[in-house]
Length: 113
Length: 113
Image (cartoon, rainbow over all chains, first blue to last red; front, side):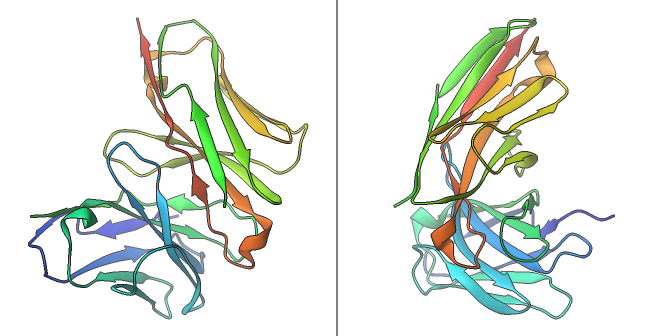
C-alpha cells in the first residue's frame, strides 16, 4: 500500500509569483485535504476535495485554489504569493466523508522571498 | 469558533519518567478527536481517534483518553525515540460533510537518557 506522496519537497518562490503543489493520495482514498502549517503552529485547514468537488474551505483567500483529478490526486495552486505564504503545505487523504482518519504526506516546504 | 488548546507547550522528560499531555477543546458538537505525532520537517503521523467521553485507546507506551472537555495523552516509561511534537485535532459536527480538522499548536516532547 502506497502512502501519501507530495511534490516538490522544497520550493523557493518570489513574492507575486504563482506556485502549484501536487499530492497523490493513499491507495483507495477518495478525499484529499490541504493544510498550511506555519513554523511552531498546528496545521490550518485550507480546503478539502471529495470525488473531484471542493467539499469545504477554511479561512483562506480565493488566490488559494485546488483541483482533484479522477485518480484522486490533487493540486494546490497559490497565486500572487505573499511573504506570509511561507510554510509547510500538507496534503492528507482519507476514505469517504464523516469522521475518518486523515493520513498526511511529508509536506512541501514553500519559501517566499 | 472551534478552539483547541494544548499544554504544556514543551515538556522535557528523562527516559522512564511517565507524564501526560493535555488537549482541551471547545466545539459545539464533537465528531471525533485525533492525536498525531509529528517529527521535525515531516507530516503528522496518525496515532488515535476518540469519539465519545470515557473512551480510551492504547498503542505501545501511549494511551489516549477523552472527557467532555479535554483529552489526555499518557506516556508511560518514555524512550528517546518518543521525542516529537504531539498534535491534537478535533472534528466538529457543524462542519457538515467536510471532515475538517482543527489543530492545537502541539506539545514538543523531548525524552533524554
